[in-house]
Length: 188
Image 1 (tube, rainbow, N blue to C red):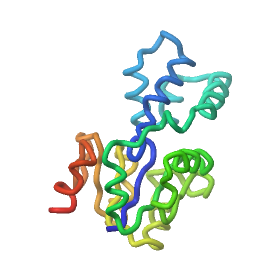
Image 2: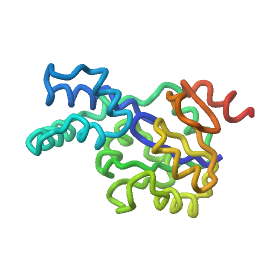
Image 3: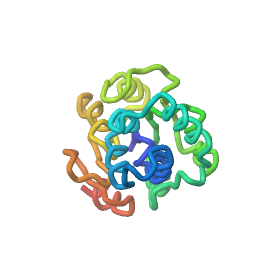
Image 4: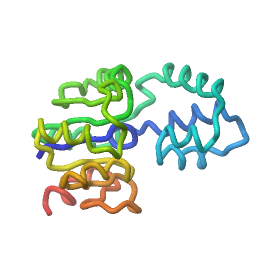
C-alpha cells in the first residue's frame, strides 16, 4: 500500500504548539479552544479569522521558527503504519526546512520516498496538482489527512481517502487513532 500523508494534524500533533503560539500573540481576548478550532480549518484561515495585523503575523513567524521539533509530537501508532506501507509520501503546505527538521528529530526521514512542501511551488490544497504529481510518480493507494482540504484532491483523482480524528468529513475510512488502522483499512 502506497500512502500519501498530510503532515500537520495527521502525522504530527502540531496544533497544540500552534495554538499556544496564537494564544501568545492574541493574549487573553481569545480562548484556546476557539484558536484550535480555526487552526483545524487551516493555519492561513486562522490568521484571517483572527484578523492578525502585519506586526502580529511577523511575531507569529518568529515564534513558529522557534518551535522545537520536540513540541511536534507524532501521533501514537503512526510509526507502525509508516513501517507497514510499501511507500509513504507527504504533501504539506509547510516549508521543507520545517518538515525535515521534525522528521530528522524523530529519525523518520527514511520512511518517505517523496516529500512535497510549499517550496515546490504547487498550488495550495485543494488543487490537485501536487497530489497528481505524487500519484503519477508513486501510484498512491490511500490519502490520509485530518481536514476535508486534505482529501478533496485525492477524491478528485480517484484515490481512496482516510480521515483522521474528524468524523464530520466524508471519507472512505475513518480513524480516531492509528492503532485501528489495520482493522479499519487493511482488513476491509
